[in-house]
Image 1 (cartoon, one colour):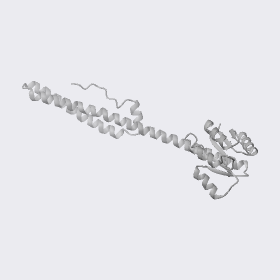
Image 2 (cartoon, helix red, strand yellow):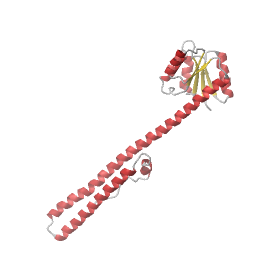
Image 3 (spheres, helix red, strand yellow):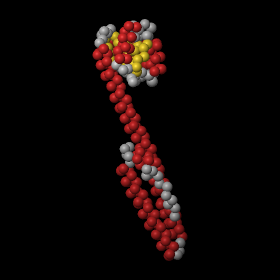
Image 4 (tube, helix red, strand yellow):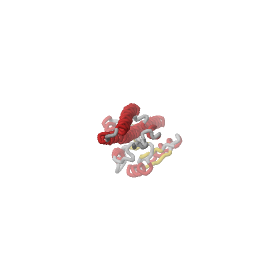
Length: 230
């Protein structure tokens, strides 16, 4: 059930709106002035706020400004109730972050059309935000996976080179032919390993992307834990 906060200093108007919204299946929270409305918005995090503009002490514009300054209430859809229809007043409210205006007197259909339109817009916004968050998570995971891949292959590429260096030193110091042949065999094996690793690195570069990084990470396809010692 969606919750709507109604901020209206005129008791009759406030009660009528609350009654209409309750009959339409909404949970309603009511505030008789701007200060109470701000506190209720922060405490209950309603799905939408309907707020009068002309109120004593704290008017509707000030209520909206205060809610916009609070990160927890900044994205709550906000509809103004007003007897003013001047374009300058509408521009002021929209500039502050209002989503819509309803001019008094209004019908039940006008009120419900505005509320349902803004709730749908917020629902679409939340869905797009969730999608964007998921995409950012995939990109982050992709970058982390790519970094692990690079680090792992750097280590793997160093092993054959290190072995080749050692064998070359042994080969230069070995006077016996059978030892030289064995060292040459080892050099050939390590050379093939190096070429194989380079080819694997090229293939992984082609397939690693944000879409499949999560799958590869879950399957541990990038974890290379085999012992390649001589």
